[in-house]
Image (cartoon, rainbow, N blue to C red; front, side, top):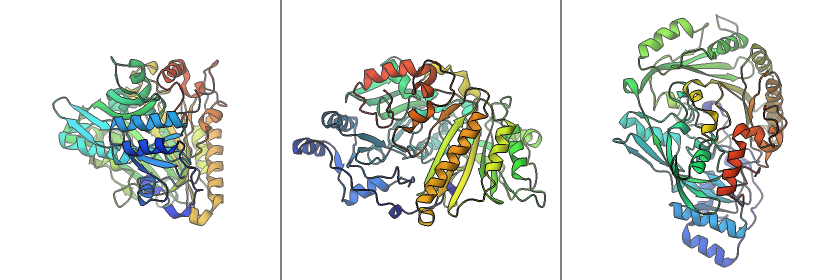
Length: 507
């Protein structure tokens, strides 16, 4: 996905000057004496605000009142206690894939510049990850030992925020499971400013909640320890992509033909070793990218499987099928030509976990991809097959509200220099309209997830309108389902004043 994002400039947006951080002079002096604090107008503030940030939707790319850069759990605790005392809003930034990382007038805790270490214990077969580390950093640390931590599809994503607290899906989850199922323990600074170590035997409710209970919902994760998978075949797996152009010429399949093939491949009865991720780049002859994976320990078996059961369906402009290294190959399939995630970019997206992706849904998606679209706007649809081993785990064993089989994302990037405000208006309408239409076509109970740049409590308000099969639950229950009651109890225990309510306003 990354190489398809439209590059934009940090200078396009000029958010309003932030409000002064609350608290008297002594409060601010104490905070500045405890941790590194950057205020607006300084070079360091702008570096911390922009570094790693590739979402330039003006709703999200704002100006915090101050940015704190802690280097220990104790410093994180001091920041949280300051917020409790003064009423300052808190936001937490790591990989910056969550849209509440950089919030206007908030006190931003920047985990990415002081708490991003990764330590591997080869004997114990574990990896300890600080809260500011990205998936790419974890992969780089695990690779020399031949370890895999099943987590993530974009190497720039933060491990704690957008991964562990939202499930930690992975390309290989059908074979190995989800990242949260490998979490042994975590150190968390709670909403009371207390430093708590949680595991299956220590603070079990908190341990349960941080695994899928929402980004920064009950506390700030300072570090996490995971078990790992020992990679078979030196981490070489048969996988790769077919890239088709929507021309209908020279044996190239149409977008609808590719969609039909993708739906055929996204079958629940496929072997667990197999998975697929498809990207439909909307408009004209723009490509459809089918990326196929075989995570069995014998690449030859994968090669044989693709010959028979997931073979190429026509002339493609690129075919990268073959043995690929997990850490520098598979985990980097979405990067751009320079080997890094593209950006910064302005984009808006929403995701859906339907009970089944039907032919009718596929037709509606293909229809929406025809265009034409406003200059500077690029819609995309991403589809992933999940499930497998991740569904062997009981839904109530973690706070994660769904362990669905399918994941469909509707996304639009735009170039602000070209489109002006109309770019965002088009993106929001296109995404929401298609998302709603596809959700209505699901005969079961969709797990609908709002993943937009709208910071102001959109998840609670919008998701309450969708049929979730959770009668009797509140709006937040529309998201958390059978796990709502326990999550609410845990939230009240570890964040009784809703200090972390910026990302999860339902309390």
